[in-house]
Length: 64
Ligand SMILES: [Zn+2]
Image (tube, rainbow, N blue to C red; front, side, top):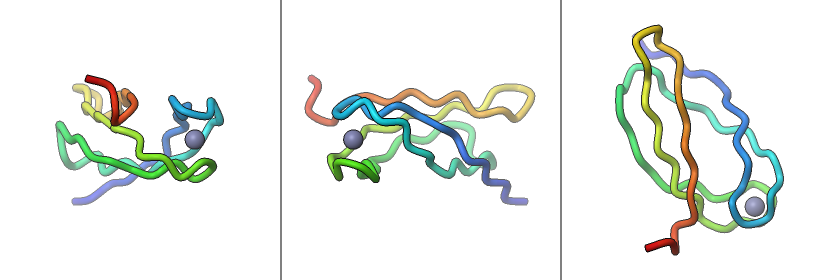
């Protein structure tokens, strides 16, 4: 069953807090999502812990 939760993250470019929807049915996922404020691509990494709660890390797409 799919379960999505809204998670607030801080944009690594402009520092604004934006909300993303995380699909908790996928244990590990990584994708690019454009910031809703500055439209730059955030590199989102999501890990779902044992309680089904998402842990979200965000970094700049241009980091190497
Ligand atoms: Zn931004």
